[in-house]
Image (spheres, rainbow, N blue to C red):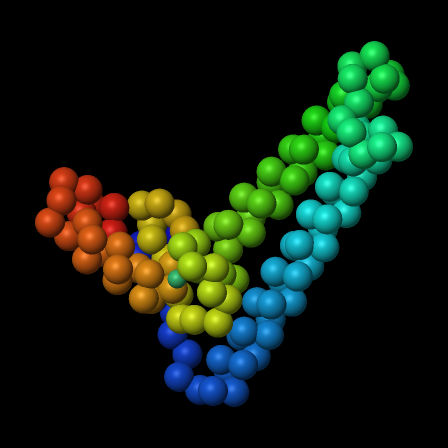
Length: 128
Ligand SMILES: [Zn+2]
């Protein structure tokens, strides 16, 4: 998305549906992350829960760990860029504004706070 955009819902019923869908998506993302963390822990930690030393890792383990870490990073990036929660306060139940400069969604209140904060600075362009 290239333009600033605010998505607001007035209907309480639609707001409830939107919020429930956001919560489902966020929970799904958290579940995916937890599965990836568990899979990575199974490879990189010993029975005491400590990170294995290099010589304790089996052949191919480093590649598996790197692959799982890359998947974790990607899901975190998707979650952070999604409209499901405010990038500042984490609220999942608010009307959201997309900031095309930082490419993230903010709740309307956090966007306004940032916009006011930067208004008279040389970084005002960050919050159009
Ligand atoms: Zn917020």
